[in-house]
Length: 407
Image (cartoon, rainbow, N blue to C red):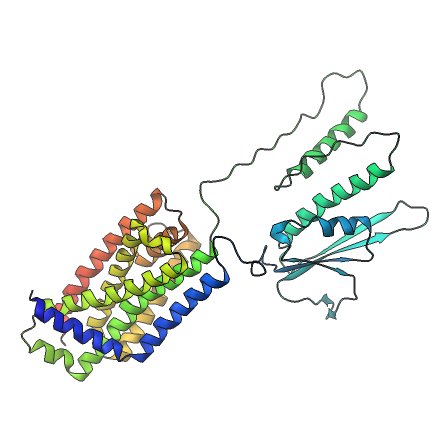
């Protein structure tokens, strides 16, 4: 392989991409999206006002009058909910076809105080959640029940002079205190209804132990960044490569190159060098904008090379089979839709092993693990599989291109 010929071929590819304004515009658009992702959600936490709890970005605490309970809730909103909780007085709701109308992504917890003659005062709590999403307000409900219990205990302690207050439960984030207090009340009711001469307690004590699994919850910011990185690699290797290669074939440029001293191996090597370098460079830039520390990760670079190599082999195979730019474009889209449908069917129906044959199955997993900093042993296995598939696709692409690439 002669360096001066390879250099000339690489210069030709670079000049063609400089003249491709659409590709440059899309690359800058991806960079702008990465900057926006980094600026508006900085650091490892979500910026105030942009996060959503359970799919609800605002929960309204509506009350009929400012009682001690309401004032206690206003003074004890946890920091993680301050941006989402809004207090306001009850108003007449908008009724649309028998359904209470509300903005998308909002819910409300209404507090009414009922005082009827001859009856004990009551607090009526109404939880209005998004339609068909009864668990969407769970974080807000947990906070309201805990602080309501504390508020009632504080008010009762102010009025009690000759009696002892019950012990305050150990409030916890998982709301185990609700189950434990209910179980304790059940024990007391059972013991109160039995005869005094009966022996051991009928209901045993209850303890709750919660432990986390090895995995972490999905990092949505890392998932978005992963999508942009994968798209950058796909754009360079599966979209640009086949389209521009077919353009050369249509214009006779590919045949003219074949008549030069450049060998088929050198022509193929120039494409194998330029497109993955362009795609990996763009993908690494996007990842660095999102998380600069990821550039020091060996796993991240290995993942980029594995996914980029696989996409390069796929793109070159499509380029060798397609005759025109239109055929190359539709070939890339058909491949993307086919693989997406295959992965979806395998996932929904529990079909084993078949999805392992797709680079798209392993690639997002290893890139997300690198960007979110959650690399585990299983991700190294996915990396090995992605590298193996990349090698297979590259060999297949080289073989197909040497047989059909000139036709």
